[in-house]
Structures are given as structure tokens and as C-alpha cells.
Length: 262
Image (tube, rainbow, N blue to C red; front, top):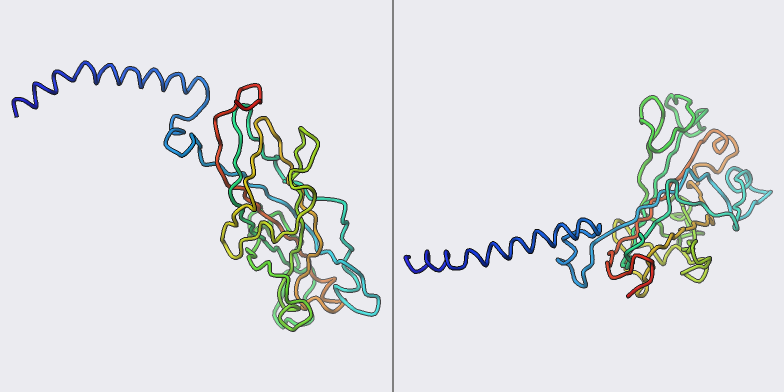
């Protein structure tokens, strides 16, 4: 007991010196803007994620069938060369760090309302135009229902015609360098993990320091089941879909402030 006390007193100056050095390092880290917790992760990485919201996206068809009715006849055609961009801002890596893209999650949201009662409902419908997904549900008719089944392999059978479809392709464009880091548009299956799962990236993907990535979403089809197969029901419906794409990974603080990696 006595020996432990004397040893603690003997070590006290060293502990105080070490604590002073830690406080000094913390102050320098704060001035550099690098979180002190960065040394707790492998390779001095800090977990990070970019969340991109797209929409509202209307129903769109890949082709129009003149002999059909409803969606196949009246839905507007897709515009293959016109992408949807994130609603707020593009992912920015920062001037002094790179971003290691590890995996991706995609969630869909469907906003469906009626301006006149559809033919297959025998209950009263309050006609109301759509609000925004972030508007209050009551009063502004906002919000949306989550959609996680992006499977597109059932076209042509009874199940395929009964499920909503949100089909798209994605191109990750580096605005600063004027090039696509994905070498053009990729099918959505590249980043779709199924249900609420994150899907691992298809290879080591580094977003360089001082980079602005523009994730461009190209819609190839948005269809709301066979409930809108008649002209009257299609014209009575108001549908908008939204996408939320989350790029998850880690920041690495091994880049020079000028943007060049050490």
C-alpha cells in the first residue's frame, strides 16, 4: 500500500507532463480541423456518409403502346439523357481529406394520391394534389411510403404487374476534373443491397481531396402496378417517387491542404 502511494507520487510529474502534451496535441488538432478521434480507427480514418435525396420523380414509361389503356397509353416517356440531381448539395470531400467509398444504401419513397375517386374504390376519396415529401402529412398532403423492393425481374407475370417499379441508372461524375469515376452510367443493381441492406462497393473507390461528386440518376421507368391500367384511374392518380442514396465510408486525413495526397 505504502509502496503504491510512493510510486504514484513518483510518477505524478510524468503523468502531468504526458497530460500537458495530450492537451497541446488536442489544441493543434482542433486548429487543423481534424477530429481527435481520427486515431481510433484503422489508418487514421473517420467514418462518414453522404446522403442524397432525389425527387419528386413522376411516373414514366419506356415506351407508349397506342392500343393499350392507362399507364401504357398515357404515361410520359422517359428522357434518357436528362438526369435527376441531388435536391440539396453534391457530396464534397473537403480540402484536406479523401473519402473511401465502402458501401451504399438505396431507399425509395412513393407518394400516391387521388384528385378524383378511382373506379375500383367504393369508399370516399378526398381529392387533393400532392405535397412535398417533407411537408406535413395532414393539411399539406406530404410524406411518402417507403419502398424497398427494387426487384425488376418479374415483368411479364402476374406478380410483376402488381408491384411498383422504380428503375434507374447512376453515374458518379467528378465535377472538378470533368470526368465520370464510374466510367459512365451503371445499372441500379450495382448499388442496391436489397431491403435495408448496405451493398459493398465493387472495388476500392477513393474520392480525392477537394472533390465534388455529382451522383446523376437516370430514370428508366417508374410504374405504379396494374391499378392504373385504365385511362380513368391513371388520370385520377397523382404519383411522385423519391430516392435516398447514402454513400457510406470513411474520411482519411492524409491529404495535403492544397489537395495533393502525401
